[in-house]
Image (cartoon, rainbow, N blue to C red; front, side, top):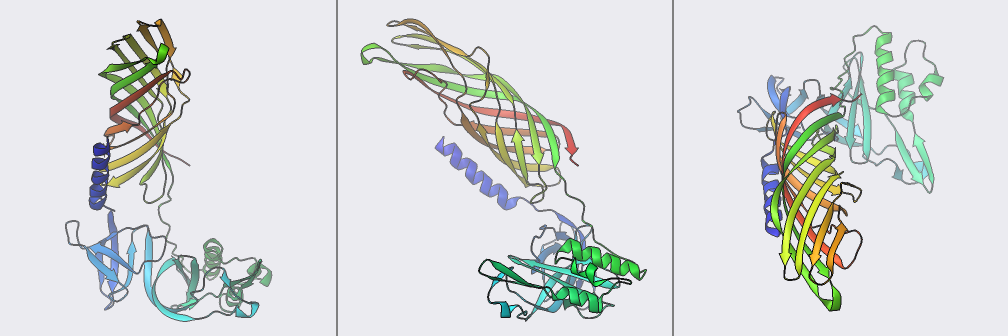
Length: 406
């Protein structure tokens, strides 16, 4: 078992190393104003990048673009970044300090700013760990920071909201009131809404980059397969005598219905799983002290988590782990023991809780997986009977439904 676990871990590391994040259609503009159509590696940036990887064609060599060589780049229907040297206050939100430290402490940096909205007035964003800043430009003038700062002293947070005065002085909408301006928070949604209204008031065309909306998907998959089962059982009898039974290893049919919630995180690489599964196992054993017959028939309700590694548009390798609660539907599952010492006995058996892990290959609607289960004691009741039930499954899958959730 340890050897198989080690092999799976090695396989996971190897596949992860070769798995692709998709290159998508985009463009870049060099510092000498040359526009190049290309394919850009979409990292789905949470924080503004300092560089990016692109290829001139699908089979081309990856090339790094950065703040020295590129003045602008973008991915179609996803994002756009411009190279700008700006003033920025790098203090965290909120920073610790005294009330008189509310003025920004400026630092001049060259950054890739994310374009949030374009028109007569343009809005830009910059985000780093514990740092979020917004900028604007008017009529293609220099990019200027919208001033906002928080200072925490004790349990009190004091704010510098000078960006509202900037909006009033430089970007006042027709018929705007100060009451309206004071209701604007230093958030992307509030600022975008204001800039839209400002540009619309001048009948200026507005360009807002709206990435494809990310929603969760519900996938349903039929998962038939084969369980390779083995069972060892110990029965403590009179005068300290223990009878050990080794049941014959057998391959039996299993079938499940897998529901996967594919979540819009990390480019849909994660899924939450629920897979009600029917399994059965029948076998006999003989020991020096008697014979035993096992019949196991149950429906388990595993819940788990899955991680995908993309190979190409149609092929993914995946790894998953499951927790199998003791709550299971047991259908007359029992073991019959005919002991030379105690006579005939019958004991109920069933799931007592377990874990499982495995990995497989997903191609279009089909999948093939190998899954390992931990050893499990099938006896819930008598302590003088114990067992070690183990299994390995080969699971086929056919995804028959994929529904985008609202």
